[in-house]
Image 1 (tube, rainbow, N blue to C red):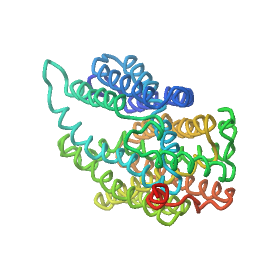
Image 2 (tube, rainbow, N blue to C red):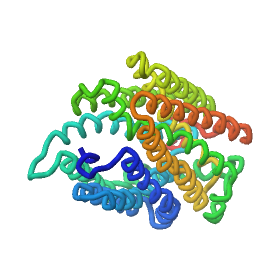
Image 3 (tube, rainbow, N blue to C red):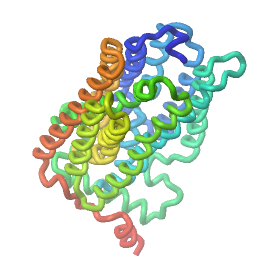
Length: 410
């Protein structure tokens, strides 16, 4: 394994995982401002090209400092993708229908995690051309980014007006509907607002705390669940089998994500569709914390519930922020939420690495899941507080896409 070959302790591995997010935080806002100015097609293509190349080059690190450097460069390369896609969707999809579309986009996270864990395990079992298994894995997993870059550059329009598959009436309806809802939304910025206003919006700052609380347990599971599963099975499980076991929480999360997003749009309600699953997730992590040594199967169920609670609400969360900012302010505000939230991406792996190294085995795992539960609880409370400050927060006035498109075409 990579940790063994590079002599990385749990703390050093956690620090390297977290350094990715240092660069991510530093470059998130500038990246989204550039995307706003030059267009999503060119900038997202750039993100995918650099992401794929740096991922593949990580195969050739030979010491801890090279590992840290590549993690930083990877964070800089990827910065701006998530807020960029969220910003792009605010120009294409009215807010009343946005959760289900975001649900399909963010479904890629649990799907990639579910498929990626066993695929990564299988790739690491190969060692061609004198490479270690982890080196071969990095090279192979960098290639899809490069292929996607070609597809994005050739197929992604920047605006509805550039889409060849939409009629003139459909283009006009999408553009005017989204412009109108921004002007009607309470607290929305004027289209001419400077990007700095998105950084000063108090609701944006509050939502940054909510997102931070989600990211901390997400990366507890993302970085350490394979090691935790290995410990729960007393080291008797193969790498490939661990990959399949780790995939189970992400499969459940995928189904829950689609269900919650569709229900949120159908009922035009946001807060409780976030708060209830988050509280269930906190309960799941607490269940895992108290049963991990005595009842591994129950603990596994708790881990699955916790993963669902941390991840399945992401689409619902990202329907809220764009309602307060518009234009350049939206580019900066959405990126700031992602940037501050992803400070949790640095804190989480390093903190849990320290916990697991200081208290190896079941004690460290129990404390880790307890911290994850507390983080989700903070997020639920913070979302309720944000909700209290929003006038008429649960009802978007935008008509359903299908019905409105029919009227536009008449």
